[in-house]
Image (cartoon, rainbow, N blue to C red; front, side, top):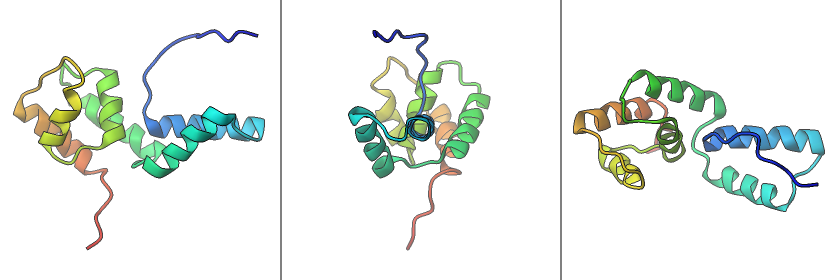
Length: 118
């Protein structure tokens, strides 16, 4: 059997974790690669699926024309806390944003960052 790709769309790590959980529930266990991916997500996931959906909507509502779906998912995965961090994430793409837009995005992300214990 040769699997075929039906469609391709960007998702964030929280959504991926949710999809892996569904597969694990359906099949009883994950294959080797999926299990490795699950381990990675368990160690590095910074936000739950519901919160990631809320943040996605919030970032989308900022209506920054240059930001595409794939950029939003990357922002959710990394959760940048400063405009500088955000700028360094976006250097991987051919996109440039004004300082004002960078601050808007970071402001939206800040609400979903885990609070740091002192």
